[in-house]
Amino acid sequence: MNDTSAAFRLLPGASDSPVLLHVPHSARAIPADVREGIVLDDAALETELDRITDACTAEIAAAAALRAAPGTPWRFVNQLSRLVVDPERFPDEREEMRAVGMGAVYTRTTHGEELRRPGTDTEPLVRRYFDPYARAMTAAVAGRLAAAGRAVIIDVHSYPARRLPYELHGDGPRPPVCIGTDAFHTPAALRDAACAAFAGFGGTGLDSPFAGTYVPLRYHGHDPRVRALMVEIRRDLYLGDGGQPSADGLDALSEALAELVAAVSADRP
Image (tube, rainbow, N blue to C red; front, side, top):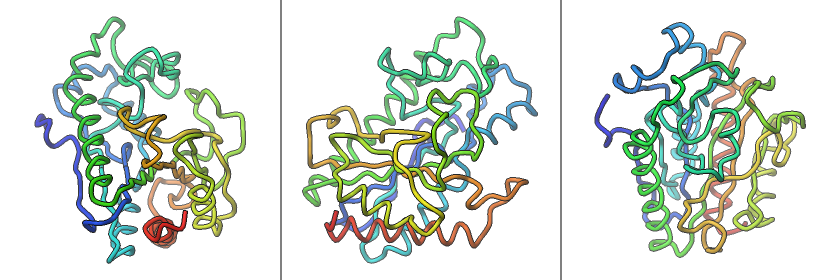
């Protein structure tokens, strides 16, 4: 899988839908030449992928899109593992996760072990994968603004029930569903719609253990037409102890996400 064009997919929805479901961390694929720069053996790499991948979030988003018809949202889905690049990080010193070796290109694992050799030049991966992804997401948002006059990015993630060592802010609550917000891009009505849609899973929380949401830098902090929030689903809601997904759990979560999409599409938030 060495074709950069296969690194992500924009899946069209209704022409007038403002909603863009963003799924950045669901894939496990790593191109062969990128794998050569990762020092973990195959077994250790599989373990790390189990820890870091937002398993089944692409499936949850796809099922929600089907349920939301005819107001089908658009979907932007990363086809590569975040161990290639993490498209949601800042690519420079603004990124706080660089402190634990997990900036735009990870050099350490979730447990602080070496992932890439010290001194690895990460710029080629940024140019090859991160930059095209950022441009494509910016274009996708621009498309929703042109078509609908507004864009709503719903960032679909999952997280483990137990804190992993890399988490910088993992001391707080770990609710069944965490809603990540941005002071500028997440209006109260959008936040409340998300909390209502996911209220049936045992409770929601705000910005703990993960805060914020993804907005392309072209729009970040100054364009109020772009609204955004992050949905972080605790994985024990839909994964068993062996990592096998529960059909019932996936179905219920996709229904809740579709409810949020419907609220956004009706411009209630």
